[in-house]
Length: 148
Image (tube, rainbow, N blue to C red):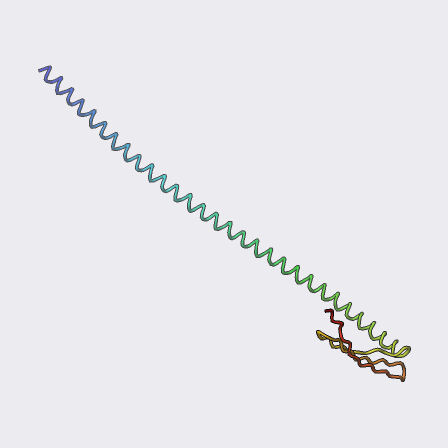
């Protein structure tokens, strides 16, 4: 009986060891699946954070680009305004000089007016020179020399 009891006891111990190993295998497999799922969730979360960071970076770049564009546009408008103001001042000075020059030449020396017509083979001139009460009109057609 003792040998039967020891055999039964040893079989029971072996069954307990197999059950313990099986439970351990189940626990390890469950833990492995949980760890894999945790890794998948962490990977997904990192992807979402990366997408969010990329979206924020793009928004910041676009905002910076819009600000730079606005600054450049404003600078170009200011430059245009300053150049136009300078041009208007020069134009006014030119008009003043022309008026005084016209008056001076008409009073002292007379004035000189004319027009020309330029074609491929000749130059047509019409000139009018006024010296006080004397007026001289010149109309001429000058052919170009043709080289052969």
